[in-house]
Length: 587
View 1 (cartoon, rainbow, N blue to C red):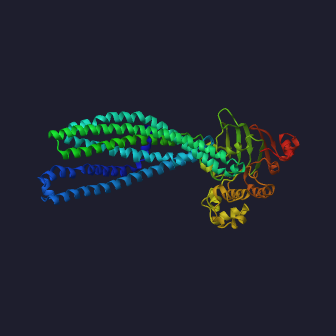
View 2 (cartoon, rainbow, N blue to C red):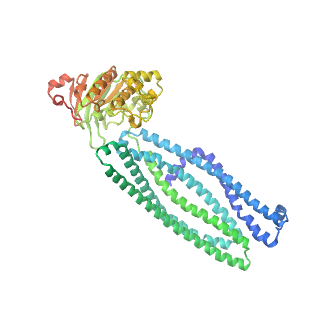
């Protein structure tokens, strides 16, 4: 029940529309209950007497043919009006369901975007995408196939029951004798269906993950000739999903068989007793036919409620996976009194910082470091030394476990993440580009930038020349993850993005490691222009790149073991000197 109450929260803005839809649904149910009556009048009054009696004669006329046409016309009118009301009702309910789905999807995606990298490091991105795209649809299922179906079915049951009691109370009670058994069947299968539905969602997410990983790495797959292995891996995942779907299908089929058998048994009992009543003269043939029609109306909502229960349980599994994300606490949040920072000087301080991705396994140990305004500091160290982790603490991708990171003497946890990150420009080893145009990728950090500012940033990054040669100039699409561009071109787009943002703090994480020596030399000249007048932390495994910067920090096993200028560190003949003379700093 808590899941369903949480789902209803997304429908509160549409209470008025829902109420209007329910009123229309009541009208539709009333019209549906009228459908059998023209036929009852034909069987009980018109056929035996060749004319109607009493008030019906005044309404439909004395001529039998005219009366018959009138009754058939009434049936058509009832069906037409019912169809129009039903159409409007269904459209309204579906639109409300889609609006709630939009609200949940947006909230879920926004929350995933706000969660710290610690969450995303532990979560498969395709699983998160599956929750946004597919699991979220549960909220519409619960509403359109759940709440509205339940309302309509219950109201139909009540209305049908009242009419049936008026026709023959004994037959009515006999027909309802199977209802407790149907309810027990629904209860018996409900938990099993939810469990199996949850498994299906997980298996389908795994299939999507396998497909995305295999297709996104298709070049490597071809290069190593692993096509058959990848297909087998995908087939294994798909086979597990198939088995989960078959289990749920068997459960649904079994439950449907039990329920349909119970309903047929109730119908057969009604036919037997009802026929006896007709033969005894206590019930007319027309009344028995009408009662049979109403019995179908009674059993249909019962059957509908059965399938509604299965749909609700299956949808609850998907909704639960969405709420699992929304219930996940963000470990990097803005403090209630967090301040907005503008125009920082860029002075950084790491004060006794200890941090680990997993509890009890620190990556950085007691880092104490000052970076002055406009100072360029290189960060060196072997694989796993903590270089990239150190940089990730500056924009608050993570918060330290102990100690503090400060900008201009203010703890980063005391300022808003948005305003802090507006003061930071970042260039990564693998520049991330979106499947849009060159212009939009350059302006990603400053979407309000003018055309002249975008072109100026590209010119300063020495990207304007190759962009101008592209088919659509700055409107040229870059392809998925920048696949239409070379590595060096993607890197220049990333540098242009940093130029345009013009932030006082610059973080460079292996900005040239994926480049050939010639391209690296050209890119480094551009990066040197970018670093001027900014507080810069640059991580690289090529020490010649940072040998001439203001200061170099050497990390080993998450600790600062050396720091100084390149010349000073070479003279000290420590870890830096060893790596520098080796000529090939390990990644």
